[in-house]
Picture 1 (cartoon, one colour):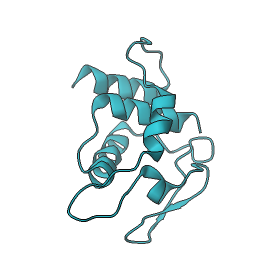
Picture 2 (picture 1 turned 90 degrees about the vertical axis):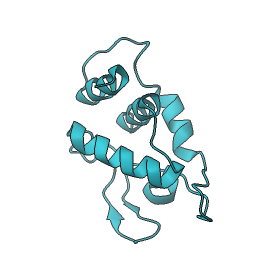
Picture 3 (picture 1 turned 90 degrees about the horizontal axis):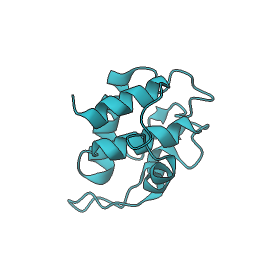
Picture 4 (picture 1 turned 120 degrees about the vertical axis):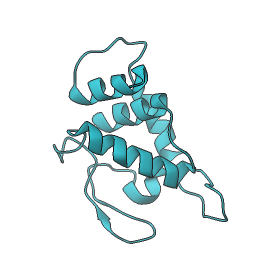
Length: 117
């Protein structure tokens, strides 16, 4: 496993990690609202498109309309509790929103941001 991916898992578990490898919540917050055009004529997207600005509230998938449980661990303690599930959804959501997989640093930043909610 890539060392940065390992740091994401450690961060999710709430264990201390070296500050040089920790996710940056401010960078995650900025990336959360950044708009992307994934290609193929798809509309501009951001994480906000489906999850909203307030992670303590439910979201709704922009295409399917399916409800998305709140991401904030403060109101949904199951969030960020299963590293394999977090990795699965980060992979899917990065591909859908950014049109590519997120880097390990981006994943760490997203997890750090979500943990603050």
